[in-house]
Length: 210
Image 1 (cartoon, rainbow, N blue to C red):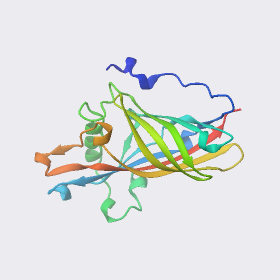
Image 2: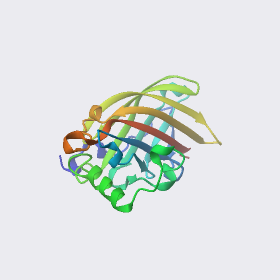
Image 3: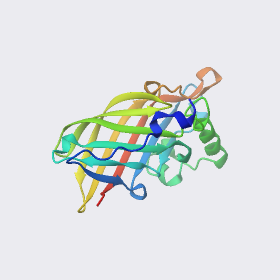
């Protein structure tokens, strides 16, 4: 499907009556995805941290927080791989600096036709469908659109006000690549591969729109 016809590129909807829009601040928001190596020859590869510093979208906050909604865009081509600052502090499995050539190869494979296919599907879209629990810790039903395939998952989420007019949202959860319609990278008949399960770390700051 050409990018120009990708339904994920639709314009943002205006806030519903009674909702107060808070726009995601990319300078204070981060998505980190931990990708682990696997297979008999796993020691030849690296565990990776893939990151987005370019998140955009909004949270529409309702008077009853459980009625709030989330819309977020993740630009695929801007994803970064193995930034030293994001690998630091994660233990021996992430020790050492990954050579630039290895980082470039991993990124090329990730953005290529066999995985995210960034040329045809330039964005991943996240939409919050339902929100239960509260008043701070919630169980969210979230729809992910990856390569035009929509998948609904359950996500534990923390939502709380910070400074006046500011929201903080954080989430930590696993998700399988195969559940998103992706085939994990593998070579040598699977002797060196990327594990199916990803570890997602999301931290958002959103500021109220006047």
